[in-house]
Image (cartoon, one colour):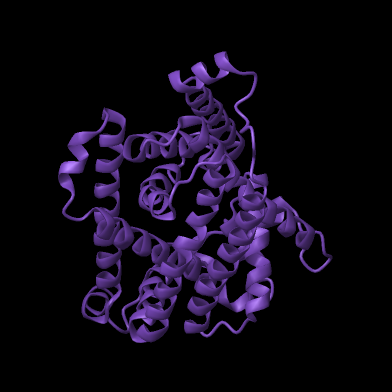
Length: 339
């Protein structure tokens, strides 16, 4: 019941954000001047290219997770991880149960003794994504603090939020691995000391595997850096679809900020929030027309939605078919019983 209430709240906020975006002065003027915001000469080839980039994003994301699983000695084929990533993409878009829960559930069915390890690998996978986004953003904006003073209040707040979010994220990741290190963890949980919940001992030990096997961790991080431009290229293709001759670097510069804000649990898959800030930053920094940015953002999102449909086809196979209730029951089991 709580999940559905949260979903309905997000749905309301999503509709509200889209209403706000579509009622921008520039868009209202466009509507008054013509009958449609659709470009006069849409360039459909860019949609096809965007879908290919979306598929590349899925593959690279799966590759990163596969590397992290291999570091934990979870033996699974890359093909299977690609399939699970596609199915997870479906669950992100179509259900109240997140894609992570679906991936964890389906992989645990094949590796019942690795539940906690698999769950933690997904968490570390997200941390690798956060680190790559943070470093990319900081490199792109370092030494350009004056830029924050030259734009509207909304742009200023968005860029300031991104600085705090990404710096805080890097500090959090550093502290997390510091606490998991044997120098700290060994003093808190001494060998032989009985603990009420064994999970409190095992979680730091699983994290510390990535310190011990740092080559795999660095490769996963490198893959994460590779994934960013491929993913952001889907939105660049969306902008080009509308006939705007925007450079890839323009989109690449604003997307870490947009990604950070739209990743907050305010709306369904960031819809509305993403379009608002993408349009605002593209207009403020590069003068891109609002209707082009809004449509470009939606097209970029649709390029990923295509691959969610592929995940739906895979999920219908007897080997993967299950119910949302089954996924919830397994992924929300009592923590102390996790093996």
